[in-house]
Amino acid sequence: MPDEKDPVVGMCKLMAKLFAFMAAEVTEQCGAERGEEIIRSAVHKFGVHRGTVRKAATLAAGKELTLENFEEYSDLPHNNAWDADTVIEGGKLCEYTRYCPFADTWRELGMEKLGSLYCGVDEALCEGYFGEDFSFARPGGIFSDRADAPCTMEIIVP
Image (tube, rainbow, N blue to C red; front, side, top):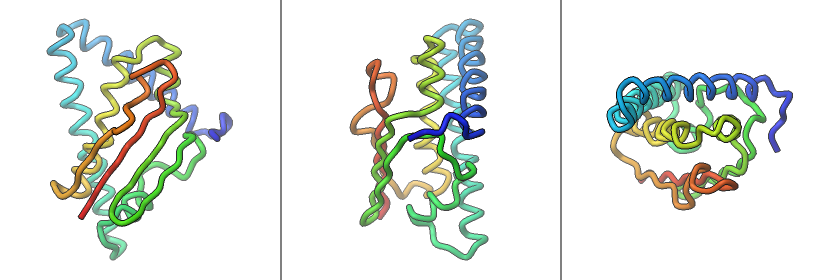
């Protein structure tokens, strides 16, 4: 369960608001189609950067690029901000998230569609960490698919 007193929750909610308002401004200034294209590109670059930094930390520690180390060398501090289950078995990571402070914030603002553009960061993180040698899916969708939707993620590496 998420811990509302965890400082990471507050920081995530603040950053979710920043993202939502910036995304709204970009789409207002550039139009929906072009604005969303710009936002997706920026999120992708940000995610690849984060994955590359995580990869460098893993390799600097003398470790292999595995799903377990992908999780261990996260750039987020240890926290209780999400309510999620993550299982890694045989080169496959499955994550089921019931609560996300970003999604919660975007729902409160009524900005789920724009907020969901940020969710591309997960696949881009994998690209920065694993290169092209992975597959990524969201078999159960993301929070913006329905009012009560959880997020699911599946990453497979050979």
